[in-house]
Amino acid sequence: MSAPTFENRYRTAWAGLARAEHAGEEQRVAGWVHRRRDHGGLIFIDLRDREGLLQLVFHPDRAPEAHEAAHALRAEDVISAAGTLVERQADVVNPDLPTGQVELAVRSFDLLADAQTPPFQIDEDDPVGEELRLKYRYLDLRKPAMSAALVLRHRVVSAIRSHLEGQGFLDIETPILTRSTPEGARDYLVPSRPQPGSWYALPQSPQLFKQLLMMSGFERYFQIARCFRDEDLRADRQPEFTQLDMELSFVDEDDIISTCDQLMRDVLAVGGIEAPPQIERITYDVAMLRYGSDRPDRRIPIEIADLSEVFSGSEFKVFSGALGGGGVVRGLSASGEFPRSRFDALTERAQGLGAKGLVWGVLEPDGWRSPVAKFLSEQEIEGMVAATGAKEGDAILAVADSAAVAARVLGALRLEVGVAEERHDLVWIVDFPMFDWNEAEARWDAIHHPFSAPTGDLDGDPGSWRSRNYDLVWNGTEIGGGSIRNSSAEVQSKVFTALGMDEADARERFGFLLDALAYG
Image 1: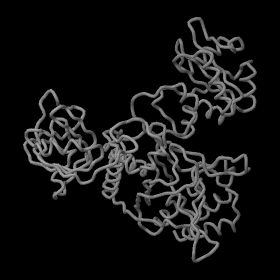
Image 2: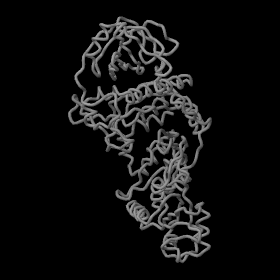
Image 3: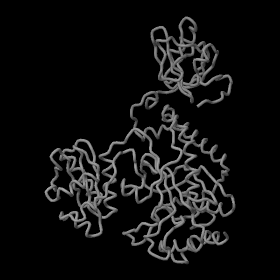
Image 4: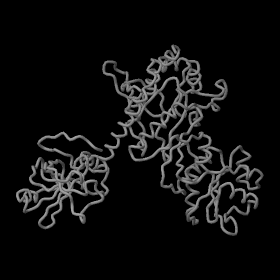
């Protein structure tokens, strides 16, 4: 990233921005000693600043005082060095560095701060324990990969702001100290000193505030929002995180998705990734059927096939029993090495995910080799092979169970046996169910949140309701999502009722929202 130089007595140029066209210039650079090498008469130092690395060379004949003093420099010492930027000889050009065609022939330097030996090497990629990295976070952030991540984050946020401001969005901050609302995770609570026994909740998202902003007439809002969720740590779960939050008025799903498609092109361009003009959309039901997940990694060229029709008249009790009980038979094919031990491990994995078992086998030149092959007719095997797209040498895995279990199990196995292609994949998942049945507590839970606009027979079974939600998935990770918000107090009350809230409870917790909806 190019940056203007604030010239002063410490620096006249960024070390990491030196290029061949600057050769011959007198420059002063400042930064940290990244690496030091003594090659007989010459001393070389890689100087690191925010923009990158630049090689400094100390000549014993041209600058004897600087050369002598350079013997004492150690890793992470902070210096300011002045000299002439010169082109390297062709045989010592470093093609791996943006500054690799030049070096600074040092005339003099000042030691600004000397450093103790760091607890781990900044200039190496050797693994370092997380506890040690966090203890010395300021040193960890000196590593080029870590600093590059923060710079990239800044550039992404800048691209977001530039794009959205150009589309008429207003950047508006919302409160951090708020009240608890159901958002899918536990709240962080902050006690109120003036009101003993009362608590604030830190926001899991600005969900309700942005709805109120729309009701207030701001129409297009965005915020780089800090969010807080008290949940267990995972690779994609943090107790506090930053998200782009946005809201629009007088739009439908197509308008919002189109707006986000345009935004994603600008955001991905920061990383040199080209996004399609229009990101593909698939329904939740299709995603669960084909990939066993509503966050599919479609770089894996394996799709789950519905085999229920193939085995509709099967005499194999595992299949007929599942189908007779309203379940499904689904399967997939995969290439690779599949010894018996691997099938055993996959079966154990399937059972751990709730399946009663796993039907497996390999398609060989003389037929399908499987412990259950003798229970299947030739027509059924041919139908299964055709539906899964199996080729000679491929394994076929099948599950007979409820649709939910089959999707969960085969979705997980698909990730285990598949190999992702070297490409990027973006997809919108749309048309979600509104609720999911919570067996443990015998009640409905909102799959996303209770403020989405529902569709369907709102006086009928809540299990049949759909929501106007949409999630954006990149390489199998959900990176965004939203919904058309409910704009009717009557419909919002029906959603609360479906979630098990009586009128008094809903009024106590969300009276402010119901009142706002009543005023348009």
